[in-house]
Image 1 (cartoon, each protein chain N blue to C red):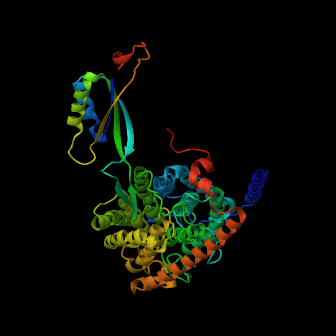
Image 2 (cartoon, helix red, strand yellow):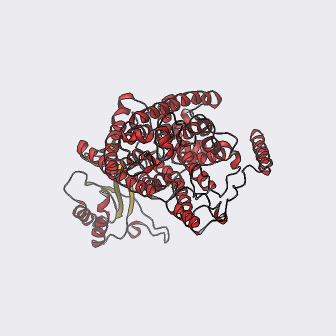
Image 3 (cartoon, rainbow over the protein chains, first blue to last red):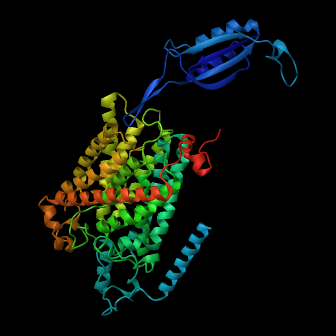
Length: 112
Length: 490
């Protein structure tokens, strides 16, 4: 099992979700996050006072899936979330040791 | 225990005032000389329509009646002016502070509405609007609103109930100190603010409002034939905006900067809330400006138009300056421009024509813009929400521009048709374009009173209970520390 963590632009969430559904991904966890990478922040000016805002709002998706689904999921996210401009985000993939469905106590790939 | 004593004392005062009320204070209406003819009755109705003085031989059945149309507009206006403070100003200021201090601003607006109402009832109304000395009215004549009933007080309005007039003017007394809290937001103790406001009303507001609007006021050029300074102020450029704005500057300097100012980020926490508040202020301001005619007459109609023109122009000019200078017109720019336009047109609204209003709007978008964006940086005071930049600078600009642009063509009270203006010479001053000199005198007196009064009061409050919250409280936020509540959960 693998976990995909993808940080994307907030307005891309719907497209990414639809693209993942199309390749058979049936569940995900979504969090609103703030952060910065190469894009950095932006400047806001209120009545002449300047403020640098370092952290930009982003969406983080967490998906745990069977090994065989990983490449399809990555391709779907890339296709849907890419604008070609700075700030499109990143995808991280890591191993997951175990997963358990609480209701049925199923374990492993059955539970993801 | 102290609070209980205070309440008992207050109740005692009330009881004493009721004793006074049993002896009839107001004289019975003068007996009508003869039975009113049809002509007399028609003349009285015409006077009502034109907002003129009562017909001398008015029908007895109507002798103490207010005019329903004028009264209806004034009750509406009073509600509109209250709406400016609650929730207009509370939301406008509330959106501009950080989220940890939103409730403190709202508590201050509500607290001021309550305490000022109590003062107004006890003796505030009397000190402003009862005849007395040129600089202060009688403390006792209308104390506890004795004799303030539904019959008009013809010193101020022939067709508006005295109690409606009193409540209408009270709304001005509420919003004026509430404006000050913009400069001192996020760091002053609640009890210090309440004590400051009580003293400030007695030292600055009541005397100043009497001088400008009282029937025998020193600076009441339009309605006092003996006015020494023949100045004019339609809806409160000096009384409301200059007094609060200049006092705010002094108080924020004496209070000191917020912790971390200007290094730490202190962005407004909700521009949405700020915009909603601005819209409410604009709508409420029609009661403030057009209502200041104290009638639903032609002068009110003109004020309605000039208020709209000046505000819309300023609300456009301010963000356009931002657009030119840094490439983006901001919502705070639109909002600030609108409020600046409203402030600057206030003293002029019933005295200038459409072209004058547009000129005022243009300057209102430019001059306060520079006061807010440049002056603060140059001098380094922490006027947190720009009460000084908008209200003091805007109010002073408005008072001066009124002296330049006022015309008898839209308001006959500036001509020899008004016996008071004729008696003190205001009619000739306006016709000869010398009014701005009288306005400068009023500006000087207002600034002096506000500045000196505020220095003294702030020193007293500092000695009694201290002005500032502790650093811990300021860091945590006033909402939790001072009011035990949070504006936002979850």
